[in-house]
Length: 118
Length: 510
Image (cartoon, rainbow over all chains, first blue to last red; front, side):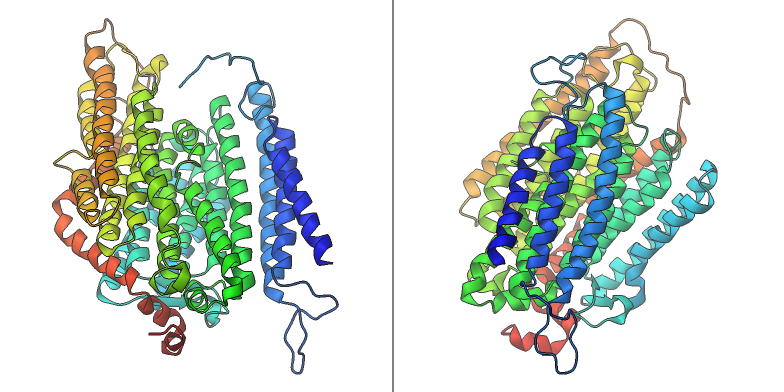
């Protein structure tokens, strides 16, 4: 199980990082989403991997799974869900205002219309 | 005093909800509520500073859950000073925005109050995961503020800003997760104890987690090589928002100082002063990159944004030395650079709004309204930012140079700070002469619609400059407060006793 979880986190992170470095906003958004999945699973694993154990401490219970990472993951999911929604709206607005969906506001290799402003 | 610690977080939170729910259609009421709340915040945080000055660290347990299980807020000299600085800056920003900027988009005041809540929370919290949550609160509010009144350039810069910070947040969680997996705690005081007693087999994981976290804080503090988000964001943000963002980079610097002096400080054994070897060289390069940017900038707002990067480098140099003298000097410079950056962004907006189609490009243009008056303000702000006498920037840089005298890197620190100060003077001198002197000889006059003497923005800009004068005049008392602050930061047992009680200190080996 450890190998499965670790390699899936690795795969998600790899794909997320690759997509994050793309030039268009859609892959970047998907990349961020994959990255946040990877982080959520990673956080979950930080409480050690156990199966079929109660997440709370009760009288006489010696085997349990750590409840704190689960609470952390819940918080992280809520935040990353909201952030994904925000960045989707933001990319649509940017696409409508700028006229293309490149993160830099201009397609690769073409000079910007307004010239170099810096 | 205990219960008052939570007020700097609750007051803006309640006020933001009130503004967005009850008075969202009435801009005047929004202004009244927002300004009143910020004035009240100044009063509360001032009393917190006075309290922290006379007492040791104080803890407030949220919902009365005992530490280390619940989340705690901790008021000590450092956090009290930071929330006070935030509220003063906030007052200037809200006054400036209340004349005209807040009408260019929706919900400015609600977002502004949420931003204050997030920043204050990040300064007060004593819990690592709670720090993440408050980072998110302040970032979410800052996304909204950054895009206030939109426009193509701002959306482009905003998109990049959001992506960078979301990646930073993901890394934050990775770092926190790794630290939790080996120490089993997220409470910073408890973490200090666990780090001191870490099992040798877990040390590598803890070190990796701590360094990932350092990377995240340095993204916030705009340290080279992860500073690329800052110039575009600050230069394209609405002026009052850019001024407010002057405190956002300081949140990163504060977190570095807090976590790496408390948990990874003297008592951390093998991991003592973990951050030191990385911060100092990167900070020196940051100063150089910032000041070269100042020389190269062709737009006024870019010029100031790069000056902010340079001043963050100076601040991180002082923090990176991790000695009581350098921390005290660095904190003085932190106060100074917040006011000078905010003042310059506000003054730049007053200039840009009067230049019509010439905007903030550094070219000669015909004379605009109040060119002379604004030239004086810009001159004072530039003196502050460049660190020339007689203003506080000079005192701050002098203290930092003095504090670095015993360091091995003294030659590097002195030469980088002194040479880049000259570059900053040249950059600002050139910008000022183009904007005000050469333009005075150009033909014609620019006429822009709008109030000739906008009262609130000018009061706000002068108020920020007034902060520089106050720092200069009261440098003695402020420095003695900061010396006490540095001593408190280095005596971590005070902090741990305040949060966990005397029993915990026995495990800490003191």
